[in-house]
Image 1 (cartoon, rainbow, N blue to C red):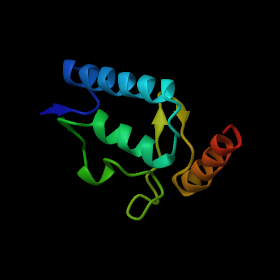
Image 2: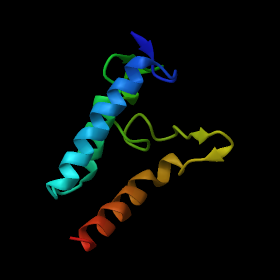
Image 3: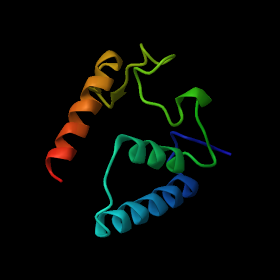
Image 4: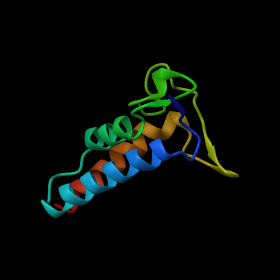
Length: 98
């Protein structure tokens, strides 16, 4: 199994499969939901080893991840306590485009 944070052939293969599926779903105009995005994350993580398995398929801020804040490089992500509200707003915007 491969570390989830390494740029590996496994990660690249997973990403290519998910990107292809995303493209196909978009071409079919399938609705995008938070749960669809959760599924993408699960598929991206296939065969990779996260530091904690409870992270896979879950959003920060959910039970057990209430204080799991992140940075990408030097840029902070949305605070874990705000992820649920940000996802709801994202979902609202998606519905407005339908």
